[in-house]
Amino acid sequence: MASKTTSSTGKKSALTAEEQQKIVSGFQALRDEQTQLVQKTQDLEMDLKEHDLVLSTLSTITDKQRRCYRMIGGVLIEHTVGEVVPALQANREQIHNVIESFKQKTEDKAKELANYKQKHDIHFSYERPNQQQQGSKPATNSSDSGATKKEPQDSGVLVDKDN
Image (cartoon, rainbow, N blue to C red; front, top):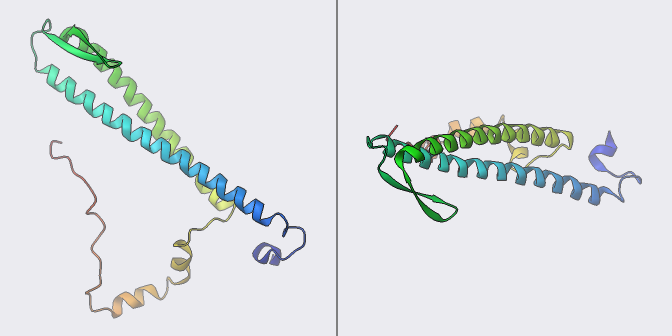
């Protein structure tokens, strides 16, 4: 067990730096993949909201022969409301399916990341002090006069007033 913690054995000392670099780069690659999935999901959710907004606007129009314009590939194309609404609904459904697929892939990637982290015993610098000083942390908070207590971190939440 001493070879795991100190790596002072002759066998592992030559490859330790390379192995560590490979492990770190593999972890970073997994995190980058997860970040890309989250970003794509957010972009698609914005597209979905835009589709919902357009569909709600078009639903108020009773004349299905009324002209409307739809941008396809950077070109405005003239259609009627009756032609555009079914196409938008189909696109909305496809976007929703892709979002669900990306959310599942993100969850799978998070599990893969957790397994990789556990397998290679990866810890962030902020994780180790918390694990070592758990017993002393509540004592320092109780000795304060209450002036340094922080409020819950919910100030970054945006709430949509329309819903």
